[in-house]
Image 1 (cartoon, rainbow, N blue to C red):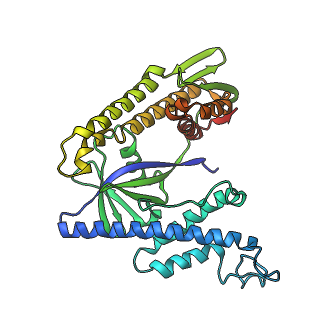
Image 2: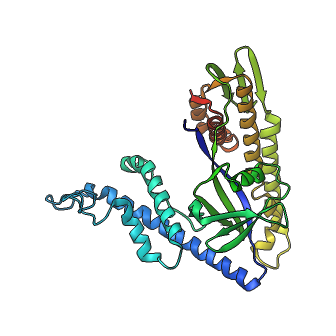
Image 3: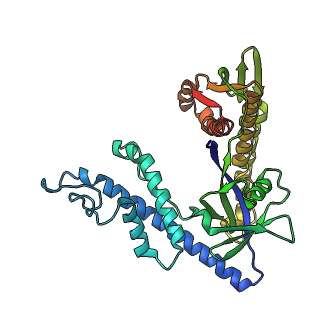
Length: 364
């Protein structure tokens, strides 16, 4: 019997595990070079896939031109000399082979084609523009390129990726990262295609793990009705039981307090001491750059986690978000709500945690 699984991603800070300064700089330069190639290659793949998809719609071509995007060796009407997926991989190889591991090129090609296929209908209808990838996009790789081991001198772990040594930094780790790494090391859970991302000189491993879903005793006929609002982030009704998760004072007022503090610093930065230009003038604002985003993200994770825990405790197998579509339409007309209440982020976190627990989510 197949085990129902889900993909879990954890962001783990890692360092280059090398004491030689010159060697460490060489590794850093190699990573930055790969990152640049990945972003350029991603935009190339997407552009070529889009051109191939819309070639048959170019009405200004000759009427006797027959377009069939298949391998000509398999179909006499095909215009390609290889499979469609392989066309963009060969393109990447011709541009970047020898400059970057082929495993990275393969994962870039695979993931970009997957993204394109999910968006192709919207492209065809003209409902969205082509994705544009930036220089800080993650560097993808397959699980076979990652070698995980214990660090004998600490509780952290060592990684080897394309012959570049890394070590993790987990700190106090109040989450489940250390446990998941330990389970992955002994083979209890499977490591999937992952990526590394560089942000302001720091390196992060975006580790994807395939884990079995937890078995909970749930009844699909028991429905938990949840309502998202400003007064209480989440209100839940299950049969005769009612629960309220979070308060307006806790979420909205604290968020506005962070905004107000940042606004005061912005006005005061005019009188800050100069000397090194803009960087020194705005030094006091750097502390608040991600503060609001991080606070909101942590609150939404907490609220969604409590909601799913209540559903599991009540054995509710169905979660109904009441009148959510109407609320989102009203929020679009209210500038204050649109700016300060994160409906979309909360719903995405609820969906994600509900899927992990096997709860069906219905948005009304």
